[in-house]
Length: 300
Image 1 (cartoon, rainbow, N blue to C red):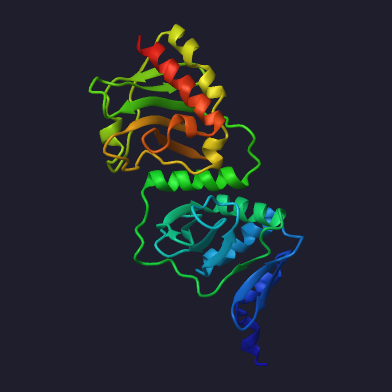
Image 2: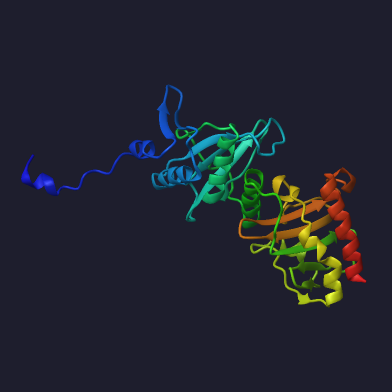
């Protein structure tokens, strides 16, 4: 070894070696695929470290999420990649199963950690594939409403959430058969506001989407509505629902909901032309009927 060899910077450890150093992980190669295998020692911190390495090396990965709501066979096959992604700590995602597939969503890394950890913890996942994974170029990137709702769904399915604690609730009713003006309401823990512009149906398809602009209502109106913020059904984040951007039918009878906290932002529109109130899950059905009664009182 020459004297100048002492001053040379050693090459960085390979991706494989870095993965092997993370507790609970190992790389397995066979003739069909290359996978990262999880042991029972895996932790959320291990998963975070793995995703950071994959992101740094622009290595895509895929796995089957058997808990994801599907229109066909159970679950969804999910691909994550840095293709078409320009945000920090996020991944592009496509998904599908027999007979259906999705577009390109932007998913926050913290939700992927929750997703993988929950599947491993429940013995539903023991590895992820890290070769031959592609984000299909013919898919379109989804807008902010679809992205938020997809993140909220993944969080709702895979977190330990038992109650929705939201900073606010936007709610209202829109019917295409009713030519009278309609109101949208925003409920916080202290006040109730009203948006009289009747623009939800037109703004929801714009680039920025619907943005609530309202004025405070009297205290007696707040007292009528305040229970809604405390009773948001859990199934609104653990099951798949249309968001605001949904095209909908020619005729619409929409229940409009939006809520948010530090973990997720969710918009929901439930059209009775697509699913009758009587056919909704019991808790959602009762919640819709309560909102309908409260909206009538607020509009009196």
